[in-house]
Image 1 (tube, helix red, strand yellow):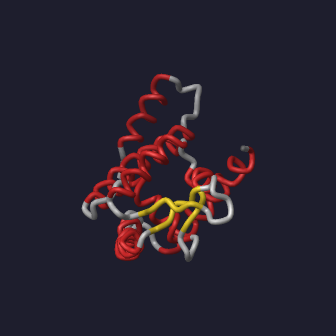
Image 2: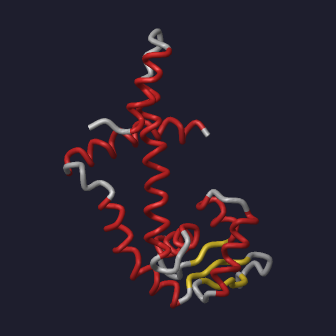
Length: 164
């Protein structure tokens, strides 16, 4: 079953038969999947009153374990977004009662971002649904194909991550 990327490949094969465009097929499909999946995940999270960035904050704090807190600088390293974006996001989430800023008792200059009880309950209720929603995106693949895909993507990702 041809997809939209196949049409792009056919055009390149016609216009530039001297070039094998196969990498465009892989990268184009990955990029298209990324955009489509991004939309699916945004819609799902919106149904639960969350934006993707907010869910990222909640799930980051949840997965580090009790007391579910990180310094602002550690959080910026974990989330790979700018300090301005983190500040605005945390401000909005603090207003919603999902996180709180807590001064470090040892170093008063340091501020920690902590998951509130409400934030913990929300992430714990949404997380299993989120995982099921993401699993739905792979329903066309057998478990064996899913595992092979994970392995191949990891092999492609590793050298790029270690180079930075």
